Image 1 (cartoon, rainbow over the protein chains, first blue to last red):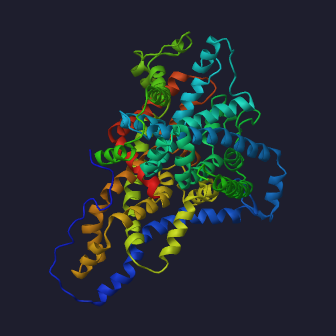
Image 2 (tube, rainbow over the protein chains, first blue to last red):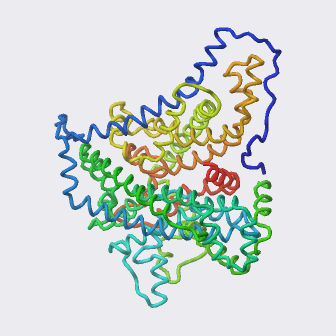
Image 3 (cartoon, chains in turn yellow, purple):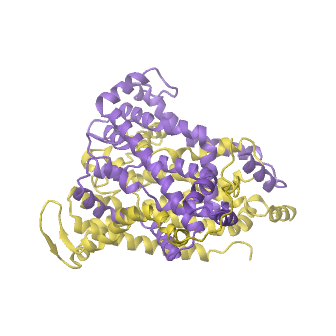
Length: 326
Length: 285
Protein backbone atom coordinates (compact mmCIF):
# COMPACT_ATOMS: atom_id res chain seq x y z
CA UNK A 1 0.00 0.00 0.00
CA UNK A 2 1.40 3.38 -0.91
CA UNK A 3 1.91 5.71 2.00
CA UNK A 4 -0.29 8.79 2.34
CA UNK A 5 1.30 11.80 0.72
CA UNK A 6 4.52 12.69 2.45
CA UNK A 7 6.39 15.91 2.01
CA UNK A 8 9.03 15.60 -0.68
CA UNK A 9 8.17 11.98 -1.27
CA UNK A 10 9.27 11.85 -4.86
CA UNK A 11 11.35 14.80 -5.91
CA UNK A 12 11.55 14.48 -9.66
CA UNK A 13 14.47 15.74 -11.63
CA UNK A 14 13.93 19.11 -13.23
CA UNK A 15 13.33 18.92 -16.96
CA UNK A 16 16.60 18.01 -18.59
CA UNK A 17 17.34 20.88 -20.93
CA UNK A 18 20.53 22.52 -21.98
CA UNK A 19 20.98 25.78 -20.05
CA UNK A 20 20.07 28.63 -22.34
CA UNK A 21 19.89 31.87 -20.36
CA UNK A 22 17.72 34.10 -22.48
CA UNK A 23 15.50 36.43 -20.48
CA UNK A 24 13.29 37.08 -23.49
CA UNK A 25 10.20 39.22 -23.24
CA UNK A 26 8.07 36.16 -23.44
CA UNK A 27 9.90 34.67 -20.50
CA UNK A 28 9.46 37.80 -18.39
CA UNK A 29 5.78 37.94 -19.24
CA UNK A 30 5.48 34.29 -18.25
CA UNK A 31 7.20 34.95 -14.91
CA UNK A 32 5.06 37.93 -14.08
CA UNK A 33 1.59 37.07 -15.22
CA UNK A 34 1.18 33.35 -15.79
CA UNK A 35 0.13 32.81 -12.16
CA UNK A 36 -3.17 34.49 -13.00
CA UNK A 37 -3.79 31.91 -15.70
CA UNK A 38 -3.45 29.17 -13.08
CA UNK A 39 -5.88 30.67 -10.61
CA UNK A 40 -8.37 32.06 -13.12
CA UNK A 41 -10.39 28.88 -13.83
CA UNK A 42 -10.95 28.53 -10.12
CA UNK A 43 -11.78 32.15 -9.48
CA UNK A 44 -14.04 32.61 -12.50
CA UNK A 45 -16.27 29.75 -11.38
CA UNK A 46 -15.84 30.65 -7.73
CA UNK A 47 -16.99 34.23 -8.26
CA UNK A 48 -19.93 33.26 -10.46
CA UNK A 49 -21.32 30.38 -8.39
CA UNK A 50 -19.77 30.95 -4.95
CA UNK A 51 -19.25 34.60 -4.11
CA UNK A 52 -21.84 36.31 -6.29
CA UNK A 53 -24.79 34.39 -4.76
CA UNK A 54 -23.52 35.22 -1.26
CA UNK A 55 -23.51 38.94 -1.97
CA UNK A 56 -26.69 38.91 -4.02
CA UNK A 57 -28.61 37.36 -1.10
CA UNK A 58 -28.28 40.66 0.75
CA UNK A 59 -29.78 42.54 -2.21
CA UNK A 60 -32.70 40.12 -2.66
CA UNK A 61 -33.48 40.25 1.05
CA UNK A 62 -34.49 43.90 0.72
CA UNK A 63 -37.29 43.09 -1.72
CA UNK A 64 -40.69 41.51 -1.68
CA UNK A 65 -39.59 38.96 -4.25
CA UNK A 66 -41.66 35.93 -5.19
CA UNK A 67 -40.82 33.50 -7.95
CA UNK A 68 -44.43 33.37 -9.02
CA UNK A 69 -44.93 37.12 -9.44
CA UNK A 70 -43.12 39.22 -12.02
CA UNK A 71 -42.85 42.32 -9.84
CA UNK A 72 -40.38 42.95 -7.09
CA UNK A 73 -41.12 45.66 -4.55
CA UNK A 74 -38.43 47.27 -2.45
CA UNK A 75 -39.37 46.85 1.20
CA UNK A 76 -36.11 47.85 2.90
CA UNK A 77 -35.71 45.97 6.13
CA UNK A 78 -39.34 44.88 6.07
CA UNK A 79 -38.49 41.21 5.59
CA UNK A 80 -36.21 41.33 8.61
CA UNK A 81 -38.74 42.89 10.97
CA UNK A 82 -41.36 40.41 9.79
CA UNK A 83 -38.93 37.56 10.33
CA UNK A 84 -38.00 38.58 13.85
CA UNK A 85 -41.69 38.72 14.76
CA UNK A 86 -42.33 35.24 13.35
CA UNK A 87 -42.85 32.59 16.04
CA UNK A 88 -41.99 29.82 13.59
CA UNK A 89 -38.58 31.40 13.05
CA UNK A 90 -37.82 31.44 16.78
CA UNK A 91 -39.15 27.92 17.13
CA UNK A 92 -36.70 26.87 14.41
CA UNK A 93 -33.88 28.74 16.12
CA UNK A 94 -34.62 26.93 19.38
CA UNK A 95 -34.74 23.54 17.64
CA UNK A 96 -31.45 24.23 15.87
CA UNK A 97 -29.64 25.08 19.08
CA UNK A 98 -31.23 22.17 20.94
CA UNK A 99 -30.33 19.57 18.30
CA UNK A 100 -26.92 21.18 17.90
CA UNK A 101 -26.06 20.97 21.59
CA UNK A 102 -27.50 17.46 21.93
CA UNK A 103 -25.41 16.19 19.02
CA UNK A 104 -22.17 18.17 19.22
CA UNK A 105 -21.31 18.13 22.92
CA UNK A 106 -21.54 14.36 23.58
CA UNK A 107 -20.08 13.72 20.15
CA UNK A 108 -16.89 15.69 20.71
CA UNK A 109 -16.39 14.40 24.26
CA UNK A 110 -16.88 10.83 23.08
CA UNK A 111 -14.57 11.37 20.10
CA UNK A 112 -11.89 12.70 22.42
CA UNK A 113 -12.16 9.63 24.62
CA UNK A 114 -12.11 7.27 21.62
CA UNK A 115 -9.01 8.95 20.23
CA UNK A 116 -7.42 8.59 23.64
CA UNK A 117 -8.15 4.85 23.57
CA UNK A 118 -6.77 4.52 20.05
CA UNK A 119 -3.63 6.47 20.88
CA UNK A 120 -1.68 3.63 22.42
CA UNK A 121 -0.04 0.41 21.29
CA UNK A 122 -2.96 -1.48 19.80
CA UNK A 123 -3.56 -4.48 17.62
CA UNK A 124 -5.83 -4.07 14.58
CA UNK A 125 -5.33 -0.30 14.62
CA UNK A 126 -6.35 -0.02 10.94
CA UNK A 127 -9.46 -2.14 11.43
CA UNK A 128 -10.69 0.15 14.21
CA UNK A 129 -9.94 3.29 12.21
CA UNK A 130 -11.72 2.06 9.09
CA UNK A 131 -14.85 0.97 10.95
CA UNK A 132 -14.88 4.27 12.86
CA UNK A 133 -15.03 6.18 9.60
CA UNK A 134 -17.59 3.90 7.97
CA UNK A 135 -20.60 5.97 9.16
CA UNK A 136 -19.02 9.06 7.68
CA UNK A 137 -18.99 7.73 4.12
CA UNK A 138 -22.68 6.81 4.39
CA UNK A 139 -24.88 9.50 2.85
CA UNK A 140 -27.21 11.61 4.97
CA UNK A 141 -30.18 10.14 3.14
CA UNK A 142 -29.05 6.60 3.84
CA UNK A 143 -28.42 7.44 7.51
CA UNK A 144 -31.90 8.88 7.98
CA UNK A 145 -33.60 6.05 6.12
CA UNK A 146 -31.81 3.45 8.24
CA UNK A 147 -32.33 5.25 11.54
CA UNK A 148 -35.96 6.06 10.79
CA UNK A 149 -36.48 2.33 10.58
CA UNK A 150 -34.54 1.77 13.79
CA UNK A 151 -36.55 4.51 15.53
CA UNK A 152 -39.86 3.36 13.98
CA UNK A 153 -42.88 3.26 16.25
CA UNK A 154 -44.25 -0.13 15.24
CA UNK A 155 -41.41 -2.26 13.95
CA UNK A 156 -38.38 -0.24 14.98
CA UNK A 157 -35.54 -2.24 16.45
CA UNK A 158 -35.02 0.26 19.27
CA UNK A 159 -38.64 0.08 20.39
CA UNK A 160 -38.49 -3.70 20.24
CA UNK A 161 -35.50 -3.65 22.58
CA UNK A 162 -37.22 -1.14 24.90
CA UNK A 163 -40.31 -3.33 24.87
CA UNK A 164 -38.30 -6.43 25.71
CA UNK A 165 -37.01 -4.66 28.83
CA UNK A 166 -40.54 -3.60 29.74
CA UNK A 167 -39.86 0.08 29.16
CA UNK A 168 -42.65 0.58 26.64
CA UNK A 169 -42.55 1.95 23.11
CA UNK A 170 -41.76 5.54 22.29
CA UNK A 171 -43.21 7.50 19.38
CA UNK A 172 -39.87 9.12 18.61
CA UNK A 173 -41.10 11.52 15.95
CA UNK A 174 -44.03 12.86 17.94
CA UNK A 175 -42.33 14.66 20.83
CA UNK A 176 -39.92 17.57 20.81
CA UNK A 177 -37.37 15.99 23.13
CA UNK A 178 -37.58 12.49 21.62
CA UNK A 179 -37.35 13.72 18.02
CA UNK A 180 -34.38 15.92 18.91
CA UNK A 181 -32.70 12.95 20.58
CA UNK A 182 -33.31 10.74 17.53
CA UNK A 183 -31.92 13.34 15.11
CA UNK A 184 -28.95 14.02 17.40
CA UNK A 185 -28.24 10.27 17.42
CA UNK A 186 -28.09 10.22 13.62
CA UNK A 187 -25.66 13.15 13.57
CA UNK A 188 -23.53 11.66 16.31
CA UNK A 189 -23.37 8.31 14.56
CA UNK A 190 -22.20 9.94 11.36
CA UNK A 191 -19.57 12.31 12.79
CA UNK A 192 -18.07 10.86 16.00
CA UNK A 193 -15.54 8.64 14.22
CA UNK A 194 -14.45 11.44 11.93
CA UNK A 195 -13.73 13.74 14.85
CA UNK A 196 -12.01 10.93 16.76
CA UNK A 197 -9.58 10.49 13.84
CA UNK A 198 -8.84 14.21 13.77
CA UNK A 199 -8.13 14.17 17.51
CA UNK A 200 -6.00 11.05 17.09
CA UNK A 201 -3.91 12.77 14.43
CA UNK A 202 -3.26 15.66 16.81
CA UNK A 203 -2.53 13.34 19.75
CA UNK A 204 0.17 11.53 17.82
CA UNK A 205 2.12 14.75 17.67
CA UNK A 206 2.24 15.09 21.47
CA UNK A 207 5.76 14.22 22.75
CA UNK A 208 5.61 10.85 24.46
CA UNK A 209 8.08 11.96 27.15
CA UNK A 210 5.24 13.88 28.78
CA UNK A 211 3.25 10.66 29.19
CA UNK A 212 6.29 8.73 30.42
CA UNK A 213 6.92 11.31 33.11
CA UNK A 214 3.26 11.29 34.10
CA UNK A 215 3.20 7.49 34.27
CA UNK A 216 6.23 7.53 36.56
CA UNK A 217 4.45 10.05 38.75
CA UNK A 218 1.54 7.61 38.94
CA UNK A 219 -1.02 9.62 36.99
CA UNK A 220 -4.00 7.58 35.77
CA UNK A 221 -4.78 7.51 32.04
CA UNK A 222 -7.84 9.67 32.63
CA UNK A 223 -5.69 12.17 34.48
CA UNK A 224 -3.22 12.07 31.58
CA UNK A 225 -6.01 12.75 29.11
CA UNK A 226 -7.19 15.73 31.14
CA UNK A 227 -3.86 17.20 32.12
CA UNK A 228 -1.60 16.45 29.15
CA UNK A 229 -3.55 15.54 26.04
CA UNK A 230 -6.32 18.13 26.16
CA UNK A 231 -4.04 21.13 26.77
CA UNK A 232 -1.58 19.92 24.13
CA UNK A 233 -4.16 19.49 21.36
CA UNK A 234 -6.20 22.56 22.21
CA UNK A 235 -5.87 24.16 18.73
CA UNK A 236 -7.38 21.02 17.22
CA UNK A 237 -10.19 21.05 19.79
CA UNK A 238 -10.96 24.66 18.95
CA UNK A 239 -10.95 23.74 15.25
CA UNK A 240 -13.42 20.87 15.73
CA UNK A 241 -15.69 22.96 17.96
CA UNK A 242 -15.89 25.67 15.30
CA UNK A 243 -16.47 23.24 12.45
CA UNK A 244 -19.11 21.34 14.44
CA UNK A 245 -20.85 24.57 15.39
CA UNK A 246 -21.05 25.71 11.78
CA UNK A 247 -22.29 22.25 10.81
CA UNK A 248 -24.90 22.19 13.59
CA UNK A 249 -26.36 25.50 12.51
CA UNK A 250 -26.91 24.13 9.00
CA UNK A 251 -28.65 20.85 9.85
CA UNK A 252 -31.35 20.25 7.28
CA UNK A 253 -31.36 16.86 5.59
CA UNK A 254 -31.89 14.90 8.83
CA UNK A 255 -35.05 16.71 10.02
CA UNK A 256 -36.31 16.98 6.44
CA UNK A 257 -36.14 13.27 5.75
CA UNK A 258 -37.14 12.28 9.26
CA UNK A 259 -40.30 14.33 8.72
CA UNK A 260 -40.85 12.83 5.27
CA UNK A 261 -41.07 9.42 6.94
CA UNK A 262 -44.26 10.55 8.67
CA UNK A 263 -45.87 12.15 5.65
CA UNK A 264 -44.65 13.89 2.53
CA UNK A 265 -46.34 17.05 3.79
CA UNK A 266 -44.26 17.11 6.96
CA UNK A 267 -41.04 17.25 4.95
CA UNK A 268 -40.54 21.01 5.00
CA UNK A 269 -42.16 21.70 8.36
CA UNK A 270 -40.12 19.32 10.49
CA UNK A 271 -43.01 17.30 11.83
CA UNK A 272 -46.71 18.19 12.02
CA UNK A 273 -46.14 20.57 14.94
CA UNK A 274 -42.79 21.88 13.68
CA UNK A 275 -41.28 20.09 16.65
CA UNK A 276 -38.01 19.48 14.80
CA UNK A 277 -37.91 22.17 12.13
CA UNK A 278 -34.43 23.68 12.06
CA UNK A 279 -33.44 27.11 10.75
CA UNK A 280 -32.12 25.71 7.49
CA UNK A 281 -35.34 23.79 7.01
CA UNK A 282 -37.34 26.94 7.74
CA UNK A 283 -35.31 28.67 5.03
CA UNK A 284 -36.13 25.81 2.65
CA UNK A 285 -39.82 26.04 3.45
CA UNK A 286 -39.92 29.78 2.78
CA UNK A 287 -37.69 29.70 -0.29
CA UNK A 288 -38.64 26.51 -2.08
CA UNK A 289 -42.17 25.76 -0.92
CA UNK A 290 -43.66 29.27 -0.77
CA UNK A 291 -41.05 30.67 -3.20
CA UNK A 292 -40.73 33.82 -1.07
CA UNK A 293 -37.18 34.53 -2.22
CA UNK A 294 -36.88 37.91 -0.50
CA UNK A 295 -38.11 36.65 2.84
CA UNK A 296 -35.98 33.50 2.62
CA UNK A 297 -32.91 35.58 1.80
CA UNK A 298 -33.49 37.66 4.90
CA UNK A 299 -33.73 34.41 6.87
CA UNK A 300 -30.43 33.29 5.32
CA UNK A 301 -28.69 36.47 6.46
CA UNK A 302 -30.06 36.30 9.99
CA UNK A 303 -29.02 32.67 10.10
CA UNK A 304 -25.52 33.61 9.00
CA UNK A 305 -25.28 36.29 11.69
CA UNK A 306 -26.42 33.73 14.27
CA UNK A 307 -23.73 31.34 13.05
CA UNK A 308 -21.09 34.04 13.46
CA UNK A 309 -22.43 34.87 16.92
CA UNK A 310 -22.56 31.27 18.14
CA UNK A 311 -19.16 30.42 16.68
CA UNK A 312 -17.70 33.49 18.35
CA UNK A 313 -19.18 32.60 21.73
CA UNK A 314 -18.01 28.99 21.44
CA UNK A 315 -14.56 30.12 20.43
CA UNK A 316 -14.29 32.33 23.50
CA UNK A 317 -15.53 29.54 25.79
CA UNK A 318 -13.11 26.94 24.42
CA UNK A 319 -10.20 29.35 24.44
CA UNK A 320 -10.79 30.24 28.07
CA UNK A 321 -11.08 26.64 29.17
CA UNK A 322 -7.98 25.88 31.15
CA UNK A 323 -6.09 22.64 30.91
CA UNK A 324 -4.86 20.93 34.04
CA UNK A 325 -1.24 21.94 33.63
CA UNK A 326 -1.51 25.02 35.83
CA UNK B 1 0.58 3.30 5.36
CA UNK B 2 3.51 1.51 6.95
CA UNK B 3 5.18 4.84 7.55
CA UNK B 4 2.22 6.10 9.54
CA UNK B 5 1.87 2.92 11.56
CA UNK B 6 5.50 2.78 12.58
CA UNK B 7 5.42 6.42 13.50
CA UNK B 8 2.37 5.83 15.64
CA UNK B 9 4.02 2.88 17.37
CA UNK B 10 7.16 4.83 18.05
CA UNK B 11 5.24 7.77 19.45
CA UNK B 12 3.22 5.65 21.79
CA UNK B 13 5.93 3.23 22.90
CA UNK B 14 6.53 3.42 26.60
CA UNK B 15 2.87 4.02 27.32
CA UNK B 16 0.74 1.47 29.03
CA UNK B 17 -0.39 -1.12 26.51
CA UNK B 18 -4.10 -1.40 25.87
CA UNK B 19 -5.92 -3.71 28.27
CA UNK B 20 -8.87 -6.00 27.55
CA UNK B 21 -11.29 -3.26 28.60
CA UNK B 22 -9.96 -0.96 25.88
CA UNK B 23 -10.41 -3.67 23.27
CA UNK B 24 -13.93 -4.40 24.47
CA UNK B 25 -14.86 -0.74 24.28
CA UNK B 26 -13.37 -0.31 20.82
CA UNK B 27 -15.06 -3.48 19.59
CA UNK B 28 -18.39 -2.21 20.90
CA UNK B 29 -17.86 1.08 19.07
CA UNK B 30 -16.88 -0.76 15.89
CA UNK B 31 -20.05 -2.83 16.25
CA UNK B 32 -22.29 0.22 16.59
CA UNK B 33 -20.52 1.91 13.67
CA UNK B 34 -21.06 -1.01 11.33
CA UNK B 35 -24.40 -2.33 12.57
CA UNK B 36 -26.79 0.18 10.93
CA UNK B 37 -25.20 -0.50 7.53
CA UNK B 38 -25.37 -4.24 8.14
CA UNK B 39 -28.97 -3.81 9.27
CA UNK B 40 -29.89 -2.12 5.98
CA UNK B 41 -28.58 -5.21 4.16
CA UNK B 42 -30.58 -7.49 6.48
CA UNK B 43 -33.82 -5.59 5.86
CA UNK B 44 -33.08 -5.33 2.15
CA UNK B 45 -32.87 -9.10 1.85
CA UNK B 46 -36.21 -9.89 3.54
CA UNK B 47 -39.78 -8.98 2.76
CA UNK B 48 -41.83 -6.51 4.80
CA UNK B 49 -43.61 -9.15 6.85
CA UNK B 50 -40.30 -10.39 8.27
CA UNK B 51 -39.78 -6.98 9.90
CA UNK B 52 -42.89 -7.39 12.01
CA UNK B 53 -41.61 -10.55 13.67
CA UNK B 54 -40.41 -10.51 17.27
CA UNK B 55 -37.48 -10.97 17.44
CA UNK B 56 -36.71 -9.58 13.98
CA UNK B 57 -34.35 -11.47 11.66
CA UNK B 58 -30.71 -10.63 12.28
CA UNK B 59 -29.09 -12.38 9.34
CA UNK B 60 -29.61 -11.63 5.63
CA UNK B 61 -32.38 -13.52 3.85
CA UNK B 62 -32.84 -14.53 0.24
CA UNK B 63 -35.07 -11.75 -1.03
CA UNK B 64 -32.43 -9.20 -2.00
CA UNK B 65 -32.65 -9.44 -5.79
CA UNK B 66 -36.43 -9.45 -5.79
CA UNK B 67 -36.30 -6.23 -3.75
CA UNK B 68 -33.71 -4.72 -6.08
CA UNK B 69 -36.01 -5.39 -9.01
CA UNK B 70 -38.83 -3.69 -7.10
CA UNK B 71 -36.63 -0.64 -6.48
CA UNK B 72 -35.83 -0.30 -10.17
CA UNK B 73 -39.54 -0.58 -10.96
CA UNK B 74 -40.61 2.03 -8.41
CA UNK B 75 -38.09 4.81 -8.99
CA UNK B 76 -35.88 5.79 -11.94
CA UNK B 77 -32.95 4.25 -10.12
CA UNK B 78 -30.93 3.19 -13.16
CA UNK B 79 -31.06 6.72 -14.53
CA UNK B 80 -30.24 8.04 -11.05
CA UNK B 81 -27.15 5.83 -10.78
CA UNK B 82 -25.98 6.93 -14.23
CA UNK B 83 -26.58 10.60 -13.35
CA UNK B 84 -24.66 10.26 -10.10
CA UNK B 85 -21.69 8.62 -11.83
CA UNK B 86 -21.60 11.45 -14.39
CA UNK B 87 -22.05 14.16 -11.75
CA UNK B 88 -19.57 12.83 -9.21
CA UNK B 89 -17.07 11.84 -11.90
CA UNK B 90 -16.96 15.20 -13.68
CA UNK B 91 -16.89 17.17 -10.41
CA UNK B 92 -14.00 15.03 -9.17
CA UNK B 93 -11.86 15.47 -12.29
CA UNK B 94 -12.54 19.19 -12.42
CA UNK B 95 -11.85 19.82 -8.72
CA UNK B 96 -8.59 17.85 -8.87
CA UNK B 97 -7.37 19.75 -11.95
CA UNK B 98 -8.36 23.30 -10.96
CA UNK B 99 -7.29 22.85 -7.34
CA UNK B 100 -3.85 21.65 -8.39
CA UNK B 101 -3.46 24.56 -10.82
CA UNK B 102 -4.51 27.17 -8.28
CA UNK B 103 -2.71 25.41 -5.41
CA UNK B 104 0.54 25.55 -7.39
CA UNK B 105 0.13 29.26 -8.05
CA UNK B 106 -0.70 30.05 -4.42
CA UNK B 107 2.06 27.85 -3.04
CA UNK B 108 4.97 28.67 -5.33
CA UNK B 109 4.34 31.62 -7.63
CA UNK B 110 4.61 35.25 -6.64
CA UNK B 111 1.92 37.57 -7.89
CA UNK B 112 0.07 40.66 -6.82
CA UNK B 113 -3.02 40.03 -4.70
CA UNK B 114 -1.92 36.53 -3.74
CA UNK B 115 -2.49 36.79 -0.01
CA UNK B 116 -5.79 38.62 -0.30
CA UNK B 117 -7.17 36.04 -2.72
CA UNK B 118 -6.01 33.15 -0.56
CA UNK B 119 -7.58 34.67 2.56
CA UNK B 120 -10.81 35.23 0.64
CA UNK B 121 -10.83 31.58 -0.46
CA UNK B 122 -10.27 30.26 3.05
CA UNK B 123 -12.78 32.64 4.62
CA UNK B 124 -15.61 31.46 2.36
CA UNK B 125 -15.00 27.89 3.50
CA UNK B 126 -16.50 29.01 6.81
CA UNK B 127 -19.67 30.51 5.30
CA UNK B 128 -22.75 28.27 5.40
CA UNK B 129 -23.67 27.12 1.89
CA UNK B 130 -27.31 27.96 2.52
CA UNK B 131 -26.48 31.67 2.58
CA UNK B 132 -26.18 31.74 -1.21
CA UNK B 133 -28.70 29.12 -2.15
CA UNK B 134 -31.60 31.41 -3.15
CA UNK B 135 -29.61 33.52 -5.65
CA UNK B 136 -27.92 30.37 -6.94
CA UNK B 137 -31.34 28.91 -7.65
CA UNK B 138 -32.41 32.14 -9.37
CA UNK B 139 -29.25 31.95 -11.46
CA UNK B 140 -30.10 28.40 -12.51
CA UNK B 141 -33.58 29.52 -13.60
CA UNK B 142 -31.98 32.33 -15.66
CA UNK B 143 -29.60 29.87 -17.30
CA UNK B 144 -32.49 27.41 -17.79
CA UNK B 145 -30.47 24.70 -16.10
CA UNK B 146 -33.03 23.61 -13.51
CA UNK B 147 -33.88 19.95 -13.89
CA UNK B 148 -30.62 19.24 -15.71
CA UNK B 149 -27.30 17.89 -14.45
CA UNK B 150 -25.60 21.20 -15.37
CA UNK B 151 -27.27 22.74 -12.32
CA UNK B 152 -25.65 20.13 -10.08
CA UNK B 153 -22.26 19.90 -11.76
CA UNK B 154 -21.28 23.45 -12.70
CA UNK B 155 -21.50 25.15 -9.26
CA UNK B 156 -19.36 22.34 -7.81
CA UNK B 157 -16.65 22.34 -10.51
CA UNK B 158 -14.32 24.17 -8.14
CA UNK B 159 -13.98 23.95 -4.39
CA UNK B 160 -12.37 26.38 -1.97
CA UNK B 161 -11.44 23.45 0.24
CA UNK B 162 -9.65 21.77 -2.68
CA UNK B 163 -7.56 24.85 -3.39
CA UNK B 164 -6.72 25.20 0.30
CA UNK B 165 -5.82 21.51 0.50
CA UNK B 166 -3.51 21.57 -2.53
CA UNK B 167 -1.91 24.86 -1.51
CA UNK B 168 -1.10 23.43 1.90
CA UNK B 169 0.34 20.28 0.42
CA UNK B 170 2.37 21.84 -2.37
CA UNK B 171 3.92 24.52 -0.18
CA UNK B 172 5.40 21.71 1.91
CA UNK B 173 6.05 18.99 -0.65
CA UNK B 174 7.33 20.98 -3.61
CA UNK B 175 10.89 22.26 -3.08
CA UNK B 176 11.24 25.82 -4.28
CA UNK B 177 14.78 24.97 -5.49
CA UNK B 178 13.28 22.57 -7.98
CA UNK B 179 11.21 25.38 -9.50
CA UNK B 180 14.20 27.70 -9.55
CA UNK B 181 16.41 25.07 -11.14
CA UNK B 182 13.82 24.55 -13.84
CA UNK B 183 13.63 28.29 -14.45
CA UNK B 184 17.41 28.51 -14.84
CA UNK B 185 17.14 25.75 -17.41
CA UNK B 186 14.71 27.97 -19.30
CA UNK B 187 11.54 25.99 -18.67
CA UNK B 188 8.32 27.94 -18.91
CA UNK B 189 5.86 27.88 -16.04
CA UNK B 190 3.60 25.59 -18.02
CA UNK B 191 6.43 23.11 -18.60
CA UNK B 192 7.27 23.26 -14.90
CA UNK B 193 3.68 22.51 -14.04
CA UNK B 194 3.55 19.41 -16.22
CA UNK B 195 6.97 17.97 -15.51
CA UNK B 196 7.71 18.99 -11.91
CA UNK B 197 4.51 19.97 -10.13
CA UNK B 198 2.10 17.30 -11.34
CA UNK B 199 4.21 14.26 -10.41
CA UNK B 200 4.70 15.64 -6.91
CA UNK B 201 1.06 16.70 -6.52
CA UNK B 202 -0.34 13.33 -7.57
CA UNK B 203 -0.71 11.60 -4.14
CA UNK B 204 -2.47 14.58 -2.56
CA UNK B 205 -4.63 15.09 -5.65
CA UNK B 206 -5.70 11.45 -5.40
CA UNK B 207 -6.80 11.89 -1.78
CA UNK B 208 -8.64 15.09 -2.73
CA UNK B 209 -10.29 13.21 -5.58
CA UNK B 210 -11.57 10.46 -3.29
CA UNK B 211 -12.95 12.94 -0.76
CA UNK B 212 -14.57 14.98 -3.56
CA UNK B 213 -16.16 11.92 -5.14
CA UNK B 214 -17.68 10.83 -1.82
CA UNK B 215 -19.04 14.32 -1.14
CA UNK B 216 -20.51 14.65 -4.63
CA UNK B 217 -22.02 11.16 -4.55
CA UNK B 218 -23.63 11.83 -1.16
CA UNK B 219 -24.77 15.39 -1.84
CA UNK B 220 -28.48 15.73 -1.27
CA UNK B 221 -29.83 19.19 -0.52
CA UNK B 222 -28.84 21.11 -3.65
CA UNK B 223 -29.76 18.29 -6.10
CA UNK B 224 -33.14 18.03 -4.33
CA UNK B 225 -33.73 21.74 -4.87
CA UNK B 226 -32.77 21.96 -8.57
CA UNK B 227 -33.67 18.53 -9.94
CA UNK B 228 -37.02 16.93 -10.75
CA UNK B 229 -38.25 13.50 -9.58
CA UNK B 230 -38.06 12.31 -13.19
CA UNK B 231 -34.35 13.03 -13.59
CA UNK B 232 -32.75 12.60 -10.15
CA UNK B 233 -29.39 11.70 -8.67
CA UNK B 234 -29.11 8.61 -6.48
CA UNK B 235 -29.67 10.45 -3.21
CA UNK B 236 -32.73 12.28 -4.54
CA UNK B 237 -34.19 9.05 -5.91
CA UNK B 238 -33.49 7.36 -2.60
CA UNK B 239 -35.27 10.05 -0.62
CA UNK B 240 -38.34 9.66 -2.86
CA UNK B 241 -38.25 5.93 -2.41
CA UNK B 242 -38.13 6.20 1.35
CA UNK B 243 -40.71 8.90 1.91
CA UNK B 244 -44.40 8.83 1.30
CA UNK B 245 -47.69 7.82 2.74
CA UNK B 246 -47.08 4.11 2.78
CA UNK B 247 -43.99 3.15 4.73
CA UNK B 248 -42.25 0.46 2.74
CA UNK B 249 -39.07 0.01 4.74
CA UNK B 250 -37.84 -2.90 2.65
CA UNK B 251 -37.96 -0.77 -0.47
CA UNK B 252 -36.24 2.18 1.23
CA UNK B 253 -33.48 0.13 2.76
CA UNK B 254 -32.86 -1.81 -0.45
CA UNK B 255 -32.38 1.53 -2.19
CA UNK B 256 -30.06 2.55 0.64
CA UNK B 257 -28.00 -0.58 0.19
CA UNK B 258 -27.71 -0.01 -3.58
CA UNK B 259 -26.71 3.63 -3.08
CA UNK B 260 -24.27 2.96 -0.24
CA UNK B 261 -22.53 -0.29 -1.12
CA UNK B 262 -20.44 1.10 -4.02
CA UNK B 263 -18.90 3.63 -1.65
CA UNK B 264 -18.41 1.07 1.10
CA UNK B 265 -16.53 -1.17 -1.32
CA UNK B 266 -14.34 1.69 -2.54
CA UNK B 267 -13.75 2.64 1.06
CA UNK B 268 -12.81 -0.91 2.04
CA UNK B 269 -10.17 -0.87 -0.71
CA UNK B 270 -8.86 2.68 -0.28
CA UNK B 271 -9.88 3.42 3.30
CA UNK B 272 -6.33 3.67 4.58
CA UNK B 273 -5.41 6.40 2.11
CA UNK B 274 -8.62 8.30 2.78
CA UNK B 275 -8.02 8.15 6.52
CA UNK B 276 -4.41 9.19 5.98
CA UNK B 277 -5.60 12.18 3.99
CA UNK B 278 -8.14 13.24 6.61
CA UNK B 279 -5.66 12.90 9.46
CA UNK B 280 -2.90 14.70 7.62
CA UNK B 281 -5.15 17.54 6.62
CA UNK B 282 -6.20 17.85 10.25
CA UNK B 283 -2.73 18.28 11.70
CA UNK B 284 -1.20 20.49 9.07
CA UNK B 285 -4.37 22.41 8.31
